[in-house]
Length: 231
Image (cartoon, rainbow, N blue to C red; front, side, top):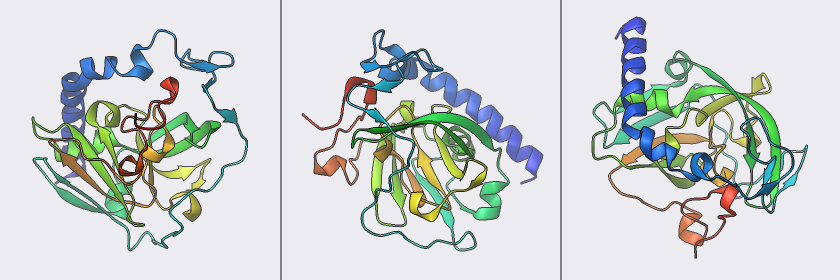
């Protein structure tokens, strides 16, 4: 497929997906809550600076499952499959040839710290979904990391424009300890919803809990509702 044809397909599919999930997105807490639970002056989105129970840090703590896989870009692959019309496997060069998105967002860890105004560059999940075209009955994704980690998201959360597969942080390649060469970020949710060292995105027709969700963490993970653990 020619680059221009691929780009046109992504743009058209992105518009269809946005229209398909627009109402569901509007109903998610990060967009619908009139009085989000948090503190501090309004941030760039008009919400409090940080969610309830969080403390701002300038450091970037490292949290993982006790194993940091060493995945070079020549070995890295991203598989996208499941309930999609066009499953695919991307090499690093193919991934980097896709439209690139730059974004500034905040990072809220369930362990009560928040790091603000982080500058990322990567490929939006919305654009990747545009490539593979989720089937009409797809409702969720399950993300897999090279470290065996998994985590789940509803499509109305996953397809928001600031959900990225990020490869660059502050104009430098994403460090290995933070999920490099590529990790997912989910600014509107607690950070465990973004898999480090990401290798696969499976589109599902049902919800399927991931690693921490199976161990008592919230399935939805809304920071602005202090939604840390399952009830």
